[in-house]
Image (cartoon, rainbow, N blue to C red; front, side):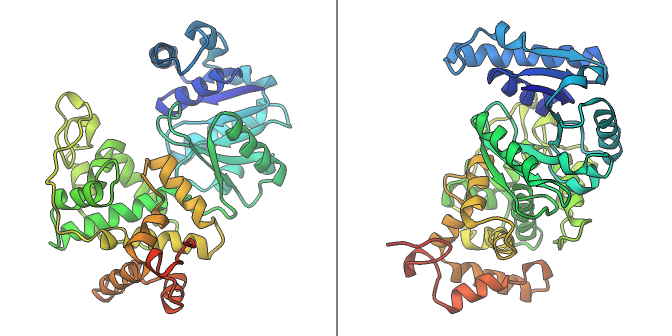
Length: 388
């Protein structure tokens, strides 16, 4: 297959590299040769590491020869599939999709790697709305297995099926949403983790370090919630937060993140966020071994969000868990962890916080029903999953 990838930043050059590793011809498009040459250098470095480790068998130069770079959309005139990976600015995406729609063959699929903008809004920029789809890779695309596939209200079944098959053929784990929702799966749940972490700190229930110690040492996550937020970039976190909330998702009051961004403390990339990173390099944060934070409380809002997604038939419990395992390196799925902690404990925490005036914590009907029916997780033999 022939591909165009528009945008050669972290995500774009990573996606182009994956496609080329799997034998595809790729046209990598960006606005300047400076940017493209930097992308080429990063791909060379990345491929050399993979080659030295034996992860890729072909010589890096052979793989790179399948990637043609250009500052013009004209190279997209004979492609089968395009993936847009430019910054999360709707006007910028409009220009990209209008250009691709004009130049790419009529049967070509146009995908967006957006993490939070509704696919339907992007599809409306084109004359082929049925062939526009979300294909959300996780960072870094060369390593992370997850790809969220998001059909818009216009996307044809054929387009969705081809995109799922493409993701599988690239060695990825595709999770397809049945209905498009802002923030999709991963970012909606990540938002809920950030919101509860922030609420606990701002309400004086726990310190930043205690929250992160609970996430890492009690739940077994690879990073604390604030640590992960620093790693992603606090400006990106805030942008994602605002994008999801302005499209109708309930908010939780929180100043911590915006205050950091206002002070240009953006996390790893600026050397300081909630923690310090000398030389702007990520180093595993030192955290206290013990924490008073209750894991069921810390995960309560995220589990409530996952329950909403399941209740509304957007994804199945196993698909929520695939997103968190393959997109966020959770050791187990979020709903597997919820079953271990006890759905009754999750519900009790939600009710407690909801009664303190936080409307976003209103328990989902599904959780209430599960507890009423005694399906509280591992200890009862059934929760989101069945246990023998």
